[in-house]
Image (tube, rainbow, N blue to C red; front, side, top):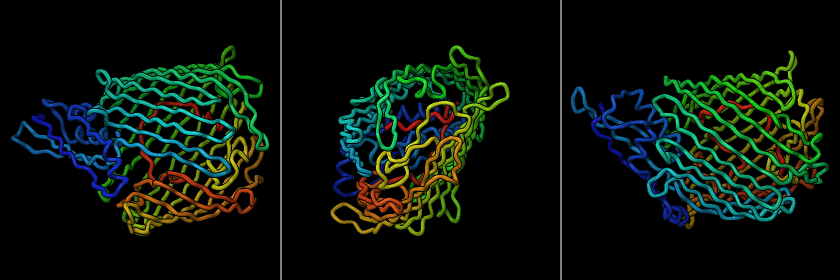
Length: 502
């Protein structure tokens, strides 16, 4: 039986102007929230399995670079729990979001919170100016108040600019880490205009849409957690030029059931918990279009990550696929794949690679996948290549010089990007590939680690090997792709619905 729970907090200590400035906005999670999130209470009878689940639940908040639960036994009946938490330094922060490349620019300030007055309240607010398609000023907000009332979470998001406005809200009962029932519902509404691209020309198509979802999930705790989820959804859309702009799941009702398993593990390296494990989900359901006969839907998703070669090589892969079955014929079939890998040559040098692919078959609906500087090929003109299917890949060398100057560290990148898009009914092997190679510099706060920390600035020059108009400067306050992915529970869904509209 748990006699007491003691929280031992430590922080990652970084010096330099930027880290010290960001730390001004930091806050710490209250003791009560440690217990609530971890599902551990004084007086509970618990074992190592419950403590492991509590660690995983706390780690999933992303508030801590490392988390560990240790015990001290008073006698045969009572134990004392020590939760040792190392909080990330920028749990709350402000900064500048800037992106330039392919002939378009976006820039503006942002603020991020994770803990406010001891409560687990997450938010992200960004105000920026976008030159793409003369969009102009944009406001984006996302907020999530965890455990607002008796283990319920309220989440909301808002996006508005001159072309599109959208709002979403959801309320859900959190799943208790030690097992049990969770449920919730969400509503999303948006209206404005979609951009349809033809030969780099953007045409606006007006629309109004909303979606309503409700779900319930049962968690059966095991060494690898098992989930059973039932989700119902309705999607309404009213689109200009509906015959052309209709999407695959517009004006449909869905009832989806999923059986899922999550293996959530970690490896503690350099004072940081690296997420490892696997996720798998089998999806069965029925899709019912308005005023039409319904059809069955079958899908699934698997992902896995691991560390190899003395923890120097990290690999991650995810494969998702789904298809409707209408009187024995496949309809709205989609396949998506993502792969990531990186090899730590030494503490200051790593080689990273990624590949992403999305394809559809039997897809009698509007679809638009973009290949440009923002999506796949650095330096390629914005919205210059469009297709129904897309594949992108990158190989990148990142080198950190390990010498700080005025609170900053400097490094460089060498990269090669390749990708293509093609339409339904055409062959991938007959499509035209775009490629770019280049180099650049990166600037990070002092004492940053190449494997875990993000840059303050990335400035590169890309050379398009097929089209000189793709040459140019690329500027960002982030890397072009992540090095590590986290496995997490997700509700059942239909696949292939993501469309690039701007």
